[in-house]
Picture (cartoon, rainbow, N blue to C red):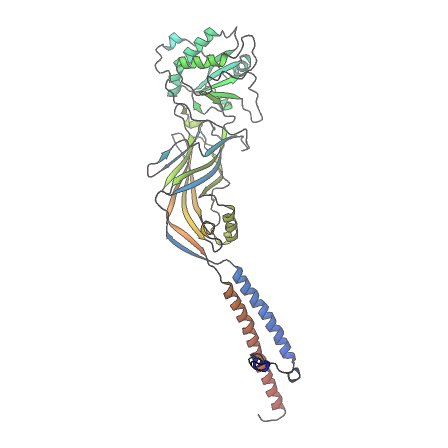
Length: 482
């Protein structure tokens, strides 16, 4: 039978009666030092346990063939109209996508980069099956059907006629020259049907933008020819100085033009000159609201293959010409990043590990690229490096995410062609893998025990040595032999 005395014999920590122990001043001081040392070493061990530790390796990019990369952007162009702004993507494999609209949004902005209206919805520009190039009448036979307008008489005509349709053109433009005979013929027909002095419902005019640059700039004309529809009463200028009007995108032969003009007039009674909405519904496919300002904020994202490529933003149209000497591609970049957006859990991990990761991944954010000169192309050369992070917390997709860092070098170069804003990107064939090192709690407890036991034992040895030395010195003083 196991008795209490037998169990007591297993005691590793046998006690010495208190009256057989002796407390010393040196022992008390050493105990205080030992206790402080334990606390200090415990704090260091705890800090080491809580500190994130990572291992970084550089390996060959493990992306699969066909993988796509997302590019998010938010760019404000100070002199590019939303009407012609086009986002294009191309790469070295031959992929070429023009005028991406599905994932891109455009907003008119004022010169101080504040929103100047709702989102601009240009829609696809209809293909022109007829352009008037087969008009057989000469200019002498057609005569001057359209009224010549300038900065002095434009507002007068706009307030005098219920509907004013104006062709903003440039003599050097091939599209303008092809439109000229059709426009003059359509104008002459409309003048015969609706006498400009007796019937004030509609008038067709024209503005030479090489002679009236300020007038064209006031109405944000950037492509030629631009046919704009002004309605009496709807031309009130707002704080940013624009006129409410529409753009015509239909066929440009004389018959189509006359049909479109008739559709505008049908709902207007001849005895009234008040502004009315177009309720005919016949021309909705060929006309849309004109841009409110000459500046545009373009935001959204595109997906590209992980090969060298270009993201180009420029003025583009299949039926307009652009004067490179008047185009300015100055812009301010609010956002330009690579990679998919992270979930809130991943963002939490990023915030926790941010001090140990590469910072400043969005190198272009907040940077303006302004030029006072026209026909200047702005190039951005970006070298992109992929970083994979393996977190010790979470599992599956929550413990793994990608991050893309890039270097950016920009330049401005004058060109004879229509200027663009070009982002050329190249992905590095190498990638960085950052692995968070997991730490065992049992290892932490073992170290804590080692600290406490080690300090206690060392302090005991030091105290014993100090005590024995003092005893020896006392005996020597008393002349006793060891």
